[in-house]
Amino acid sequence: MHTRRKIPAQGFTLIEILVVIGMIAVLASIVLLAINPLRQFAEARNAQRESDVNAILNAIGERLAENKGIFNNQVGTCLNPLPNETEFIGNGGGNAYDLRPCLVPNFISEMPTDPKDGTNTCTSAACASSDEEYTSKYTITESASTGRITVCAPGAAESAITESSEFCLTR
Image (cartoon, rainbow, N blue to C red; front, side):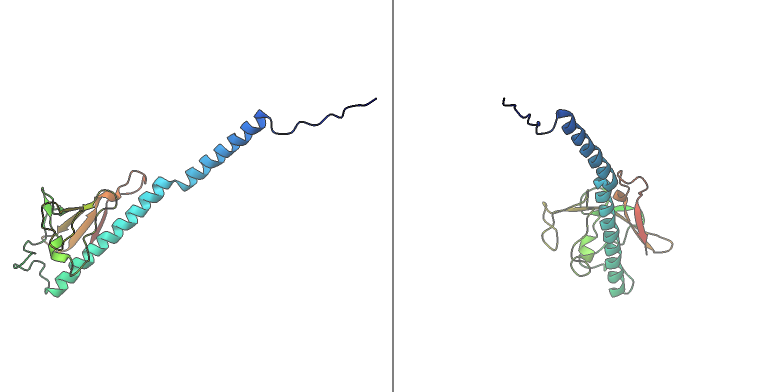
């Protein structure tokens, strides 16, 4: 008499597959929470903002040093003194202060713009044509009493970083 040997079933059951998928989902969510890419990108933008503010102040300092402490030259492209009230750096309308003709290309290669909201379509050194403009989203103020210059990056108050606030540097 021949007896048939029973062959064990191969493969996984549906329950086993669902358990493994569930464990992978839990581990993936834990890793995403630990990495938090939104926070990482926000911190990278804030580091760029700090670098930009520092570069703008360095360029202003170089211009002041070259012109014996006077920012505007009364001749040519840089006619206006630095603003005594906070103004946005740019050449768009409103209360924008056009800092670009004073600094580019002699003291800085190009005006920095906010990594999230700033724009710059200038292709010529003069940035004079109607379709060329920049809006840095940074602000500038010169204290009337002390003469110290403050450049701020208001966009540094990112929602992805709860303890972040506007970044300002004064010299």
